[in-house]
Image 1 (cartoon, rainbow, N blue to C red):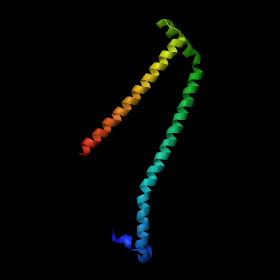
Image 2: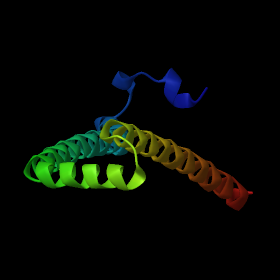
Image 3: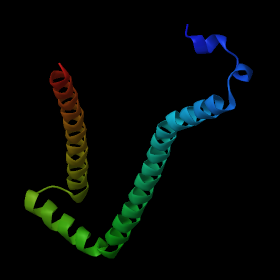
Image 4: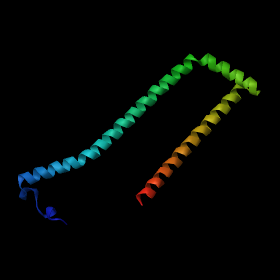
Length: 120
């Protein structure tokens, strides 16, 4: 244990006490700033995601007729029903999302291993 643990705050001179309080405060600032930045980042991300969702929904509503025409044309070219085409499109989108997620996890793991190699 250090000497400071055995000396009570009332035994310390006021300047030292103020200095210690300032040091504690300064040490807590980075933690607070990180928490604040994480909070604002998450809030901004949610706000941007909501704006994108609204924009995509609006675009889909405006171009609904064109999309239906494209689906019927594509389904007839492939010789399948529109519902079957929609199922295939949905399955492809899900597969792509899974592949993207897997790639992100893999690249994150690669970055972490690169950082570990660099630090050695």
